Length: 278
Image 1 (tube, rainbow, N blue to C red):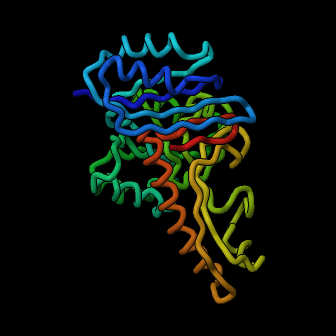
Image 2: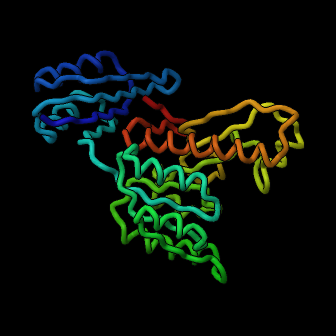
Image 3: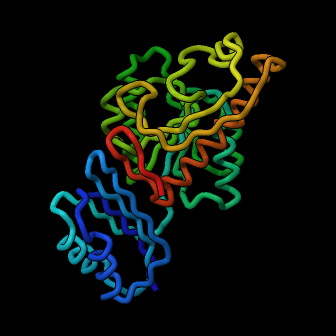
């Protein structure tokens, strides 16, 4: 028996759930889970269904397309391990958390490689028998360095997602456009507060009462891409900035792994500069 994830994104109109469900019934598909959402402001309909049965995917796609609005985006996905590449710089907490979850079988993915502009994290990654590639940025312009990274990435295709596990270099529009809505980043706050160098020292000086992290897709506006997941923890005046940093890193790694899991399970729809997540 086959399992499929059906993802629908289209203009809203009456009867869509009925039309889709009728086709599932016709093909004797069992609906294991189903979620819908209507963005009333933009008249957009989103639906994610997980079904089981013996229907032919190509026939199912054609019949669903026939009853959906002309602007419909329709994906029928047979669950399989997605191919991901991790990128990091010097910090190990986000990268290490993903590697441990991967080793424990928590992520339905194949980590193809880890890429960094430093070799500091190579001993950690090698423990998990994952290829590690260092592409130093020293002596290179940003575009020249990125082209070397893009050339390496092309050798790993197909790539479903690139995860920036504290990769601390700003990506150019060319890089972002090459992997549109497929680059996941983690940021050390509720965006866009405390940007730049040493955000936890900035937060300490402001006397913050919560610290948090935000995972988002990367676009050409720095740290302003569609948000996937966020979380916070409470702090008070007794915490120094180094303690805030330690606690913040804990939040960062949890939020990033949560966002990655959502992506691997095809739960995310990008809706303009926001996300719909089931």
